[in-house]
Amino acid sequence: MTTEDPSANRTILVTGANRGIGRALVEEALHRGANRVHAGTRQPLAHPDGRVTTWSLDVTDGAQIQVAAESVDTLDVLVDNAGLAVYDDLGDCTVLEQHLAVNLFGPHAVTQAFLPQSTRSRGAVVNVLSVAAVAQAVFDGMAGGEDIFPDPMSASLAPNWPADPVKTLERENAALLGAPR
Image (tube, rainbow, N blue to C red; front, side, top):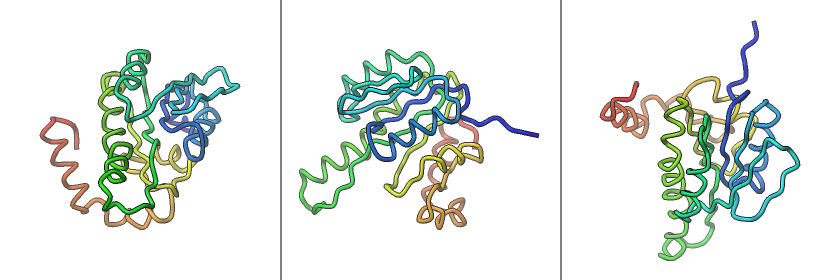
């Protein structure tokens, strides 16, 4: 018995798609048979595959997020990949504000903007939280459950994750919203 890849015949949006993990996620989605891949980037990107639509999408720019959200009718998988690795002193308020704008408020704003499309399609949201993430493992993990641990560092969290206070808080908030636990 074969099972269909969870990204096959789907519409996927990847933020931060112009390089590194983001570019690998776009290529992996295409390899797995996605119908449409929306590639959100801060820099212009041309892609030879006709299934790819590129968007100017800086996750800190509300107007760009709104334009993209209004242009996408359906969305099966949102991959919040855009991120900023801050190696400077987080004691500097300017650096900290930039870090939070890209890595916290950006994914939140994108997720909120695309929530209607994702809800209609009973879609998934993937938040990439590590520069060590692997594109193939992210898509493999979508078939297995709601939490994905795609690299050795995050995999070390998996055994204790169900009882972790963060996961407990997530379940409690889901219950408040009437979402299944």
